[in-house]
Image (cartoon, rainbow, N blue to C red; front, side):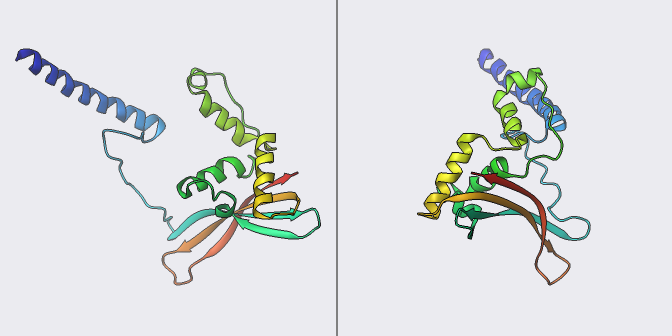
Length: 180
């Protein structure tokens, strides 16, 4: 019976220690998921002026014959689950950074190579050949018998002001062009 009581005490001690460690992780890296402590749910997407911003993207396709077609991120990524389409678009086709990104060979980079490669991919000015080929094939599925020349991903924000009746203003935020 005493062995069982000591296991319970160790379990409670481990939970208490983990909560302390989780607080340190939250302060350093942000809220982890999953976690023992519920997130703070602090704040809203509303800024001081009562504006709520949602990012979105449209895809403009220029074809070899000169005409233009438009498609949404949903059209382009319809084979993927809708819950993943936004992060995929942002990760793969967001505008390249204005300044070069420096990568270090730290312990964190060695422990999490996938995360490091993710940063490398996001910092690329040109898409890698596999992604370009996939994009070209996907456009040919959406627009059969047409040869794409270039795709432009036009990023913008929809701005809603909760203090006014007028619902939307669109603000451009960036562009990525992909030549085939």
